[in-house]
Amino acid sequence: MAMPSLIPQALAGATAGFPVKVNPKFDGSGLDLTSYKYVTSYNNFYEFTTDKGGVKELANQGWKTDPWTIKIGGLVENPFKADVNELVKKLGGIEERIYRFRCVEAWSMVVPWDGFPLRKLIELAKPKSSARFLKFTTFVDPKSAPGQKRRTIDWPYVEALNMAEATNDLAFVATGVYGKPLPNQNGAPIRLVVPWKYGFKSIKSIVKIEFTSKRPVNTWQQLAPEEYGFYANVNPEVDHPRWSQASERIIGGGFSARQPTLLFNGYEKEVGHIYKGVNLRLLY
Amino acid sequence: MRVVKLLIWTIIAVGGLYPAYPLVMGDSTVLADPAKYLLEYYGKTATLFLIAVLSLSPLQTLFPKAAIVRNFNRHRRLIGVGAFFFALTHLCFYAVYTGGLSGFFEDIGKPFILSGVTAFAILFVLAVTSANRVIRRLGGKNWKRLHRLVYGAAVLLVFHQALQEKAGAVQTVYFFAPLAVLQILRIGRTYFQPKKA
Ligand code: HEM
View 1 (cartoon, each protein chain N blue to C red):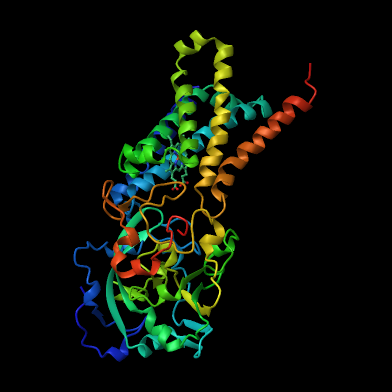
View 2: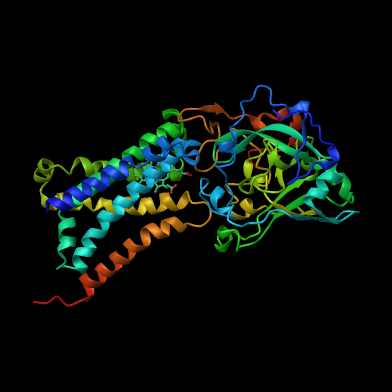
C-alpha cells in the first residue's frame, strides 16, 4: 500500500505528482483489493460505450483530461472555477481510502482511491442556507466520447446528493486509484465516490458542481425511474426489476466468487442515521 | 449439399468454442466477470441462430431460384437445433451467474426472466420434436403447426433482448430489423403478388 510520502503535501496533484497518505479509518483491513488491471479494464462509462470491456480503449484515443477545469456554483457564497491540480493543492493534498464498490448490476470491487473528502470542497464553496442538494455534471464532448453521439441518454450525465449525504465523512472525491492518477476510463481527472450507493451515483469526470434548493433528477432516474431512484443506496432487500440484489459477483474472482450484499454496502454505521425513518423500499 | 452441412457444423463449433480464446489468453475484460461474459455471449449467439433459421424461408420465397438459399434451407433443422443448444448453454451460464438455482427461483417471477424461460421452453419442445422419428409420428401437418411456435419464441426474445438493454434497444434493432424486413417482404410476395401459372 501507499507509503507516507517524502514529497511535501503541497505538491500533491490530480494528474501530476501523487503523494498520498492512508486514512487509517479506511485502510481496507478485512477487504481483498481488486487488482489494478480489473479496476481499470471493466468500467461502466456510457459516454464511450455500453460495453464495459471496451471503455478502456475508447477513452484513450485522444480524449484530453489534463488540464481540466471544474466549476463550483449555484447557491454558494464563494463560487469559483479551478484547475483540478490547483484545487487539490488548495484543499491540502490527497489521502488514500479503501472502499467497497458495488455496481447496481450485482458485481463488486474493492478499490484504493486517492482523493479528498467532498466536505472540504463544500467548506471552500460556503453553501448558502438555502442550498439543500449538490448537482454534479459530467463533460460533453461527442468528438472524443463516441457514446455521446448516440442520443439514447440526454447528455450530459448528471448525479446529485442531498447535503447530509454530501457532507458525510464517507463522501469522497477521487483523483487517483492505486496511487496513480485516475485513468481516463475510471473518470479522469476527478470523480465522486459514494461507496454506500450503487456505482452509478459515483459520477465520473466532473466539470461542474452546483448547489441547489430543489432536488435534481439524476440521469438514471430520468431514464428508468422504476429501476433507479434518487438515493440508490445499496440494499440487498430491494430487487432490481430484472435481478435480485441479495448477493454480488466479485470482480476478478472467476466463475464462482460471490458474497452476500450488505445494507448500505457495509457502511450502515457511517450513513444509516441519514436515512432514519425513510422507507428504503419506496425511496430506493 | 455436404459442403453446406459441413459449413453449418463449422459455424456451430467455432461459435461455441470462441469464448475459450479470450479466457485462455487472460483477457482481463472477460476474466473480470466471466460468467456474465459467457451468459451474454451465448444469449446473443442463440438469438442470431434463431434469426438465421427464421430468415431462411422468407429468403426461399423471395429468391426461389437461388441454389445457396435452397441448400441452406435443407439444413434448417440443424441450425434450429444449434439455436437450442446455444440457448441451453446460455441457461447453464445463467445458473453460474446467479450462483445456483436458488437465484433462479427467486427471479423467475420477473417478466424479463419469464420471457427467457418461455422462449426456452418453446425451443426445447421444438428441438425434441425435431428427430425424423418424431416428425413421422406427428405427421407433417401437425409438426408444421407445432413449429409455428417459433414465431412466438422470436417475439418473446425481442422483448427479452430489448428489456435488458439499458440505453435504447439498439442491439435488438440491429439483430431483428433484417428479419423483420424479410418477413414483411415475404408476406408481400405471398399475398399481394399474383402467382404465375
Ligand atoms: C432459460 C431462460 C433464460 C434466462 C433465465 C435468461 C436470462 C438472461 C439474463 C440474466 C441475461 C442478462 C441480462 C442482463 O445483463 O441484464 C440475458 C440476456 C440475454 N438473453 Fe437470455 N435468458 C433465457 C433464455 C434466453 C433464450 C432462449 C435466448 C435466445 C434464444 C436468450 C437470449 C438472450 C440475449 C440475446 C441476451 C442479451 C445478451 C447481451 O446482449 O448482453 N435468452 N438472459
